[in-house]
Image 1 (cartoon, one colour):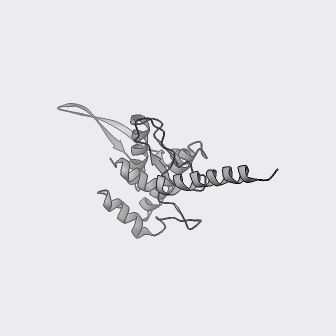
Image 2 (spheres, one colour):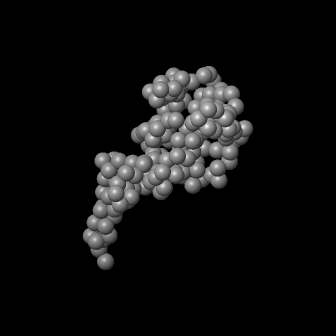
Image 3 (cartoon, helix red, strand yellow):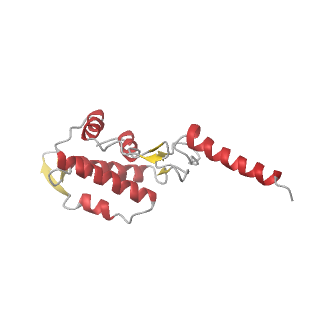
Length: 169
């Protein structure tokens, strides 16, 4: 299965740079590189499309803008089938052609949600499109990066307070 790093890279592949939303997976070579970086190979155009669909569906669910319809599409036809063997029953995943990586990405997300409930969330900066996996003991991280989003929002709040206290009556 893919790991948490692969999941975060996939979720964070649509950042805002210089005020404009970007898609770091718009080029097929970038999707292939992501897969290779995580020990996988993309089997073709259909698999790339399904992988992008899974990423977008996961982003929508985690952002609270979807009820999971996109995830249901990705998972349609996926089955866990028992296989009896000498060591007992093992479960084999049957996945429609072209959806292997997409299903693996969704299963990684489900695993993270189960093992680390409430720890995967969007950045607290409404202008940011990134996600974070909060590993702090108190589970209080709010920003994808304290250097960028955290400092920007704190500076804006400070400036707003200064303006309000220096305003003539």
